[in-house]
Every structure is written in structure tokens, then in C-alpha cells.
Length: 116
Image (cartoon, rainbow, N blue to C red; front, side, top):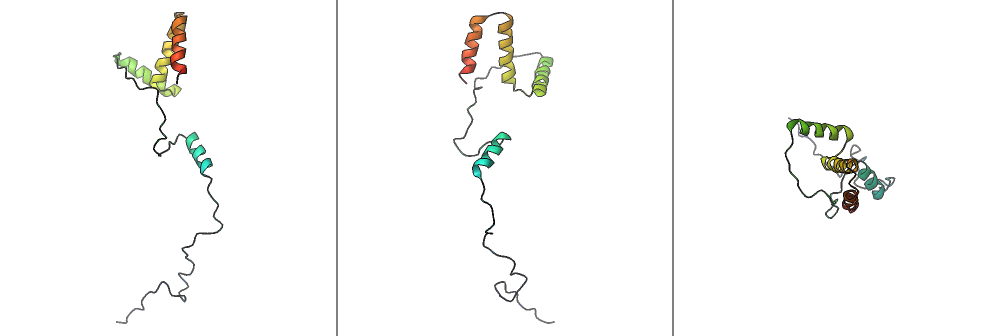
């Protein structure tokens, strides 16, 4: 059996490997990091950097019981209107206050919501 010739990668005469280089291409465009961050933020991507947390105003849990069908109704409303349950709850409170003409509580509501 004949011995094989060893493969020498650094050999100048090896034309198969001459096309590969470890140097970066000179024509590579520089990335605009600010533009990439802006587009990512518009598409809902959040930053992974520490300290970039978005402060959530919905921190106080209010667990209360409802009818099972009511939970499904709330889920359906939130799905179709693309709302969070917290926002739906706040909008329902405001609608109730307006319906009952509770102007003093409407002002209190606006102060609470405007603090966000």
C-alpha cells in the first residue's frame, strides 16, 4: 500500500487553501448599532443589558374570584383587543366611574394613572 502525502495547510503551493484568509474583508460595512437597537425596540425585543429593565406599574396583586365564564370572557376581550388584563380592568373602572358620574373619583383615577 502506498503512503499518502501529508497535508500541509501553510504550504504556499496548495492552491485549494489560498482562497481562505483570516483577515476581515475591507469592504465590510460598519454596523449602525443605534439603528439596530431602535428597530429591535420597535419590534418588541428587549435589551438584555442589566439596568435596562422597564418599570412595570402593575405590581400589587389583587386576586378576586369571578365566575368561570367571566374569566373566559375577559381572556377573549384581551385577546381580540390586544390588551393586558390590568389595562382592561383599569378601563372598566373608568367606564364605571363615568357611568355613575363620580367626578371626584374620576379625578383620583386620573391622578393614579397619570403617575405612570
